[in-house]
Image (tube, rainbow, N blue to C red):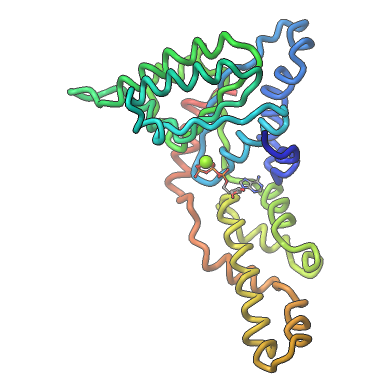
Amino acid sequence: MLARDLWENVAGMRKEKELLERRLVLPLAEADLADEFGVVPPRAVVLFGPPGTGKTTFAKAIASRLEWPFVEVFPSRLAGDPQGLAGALRETFLEIAELEHAVVFIDEVEEIASQRAGDPPSPLQGVTNELLKIIPAFREQPGRLLVCATNFIRALDSAFLRHGRFDYVIPIGLPDRQAREAMWQRFIPAAVVDGVDVELLVEKTEGFSPADIEYAARSASQRALEKAVYDDGGLASGGEVSVREAVRKGPSTQDYLDAIGDTRTTVSAEVQADFLEDIEALGRV
Ligand SMILES: Nc1ncnc2c1ncn2[C@@H]1O[C@H](COP(=O)(O)OP(=O)(O)OP(=O)(O)O)[C@@H](O)[C@H]1O
Ligand SMILES: [Mg+2]
């Protein structure tokens, strides 16, 4: 069981949150009502998007929101199993079937469900086939949701994504202005946020992923702390009081801008363009 506040803690991403709330949380949390309306509750979804956009965060937040246990399946860890990956996967899902409720998460699903091409067939083909068999069986059981995440959706086997297997194929993209603002508000310490030009940071972090913003914020804090303590007459002039005085200042807008300037963004323009294509070609919401 995860902490209960993960859903509220997802900063910004209002569009994605609303979509997940409506399509997934509502019919699962209000199963009886959904049934009255003839809504068949979703059983499996794919989240896709560039690295660091919050796919894992959302998978956990959904479990937290539903108050269902979160079970992550790690294919790489099952690979060492004596019965082989396919057998271990089958076994794992049999165990999961015994739970009353579960959000089951498979990250980087392209590693076990990529295009079944090639001659000779890849050794992973048996695993992909196994997963294709597991999903229909999983779909028969109420009270659970399979969430698969990938940042390389075009590599997935087309049979894997077809209708009937996954209810939704949902893009999780880079944060828009409003989402970045919410993230900055989250990451800047409350004591200094009023003195920081958040609007400017929001503007300067266009194209940043949540992970990039988090990184920039953390490194600004670290550098500001070091600067305050070692350079601005903190430790150098000695005395505990002066250290505290110096540190009390906290990071400034300039500290954040410097950190932003030094942060290499994860998602290149090319990756972003591919993502937009993928939304058109493969997204299903
Ligand atoms: N909406 C958000 N609000 C606050 N922090 C976020 C948000 N989305 C992501 N983060 C933070 O950004 C980092 C990356 O997020 P996450 O691991 O969910 O991305 P991902 O899409 O799963 O990445 P990958 O494709 O590399 O697996 C995490 O530290 C997470 O806490
Ligand atoms: Mg992830």
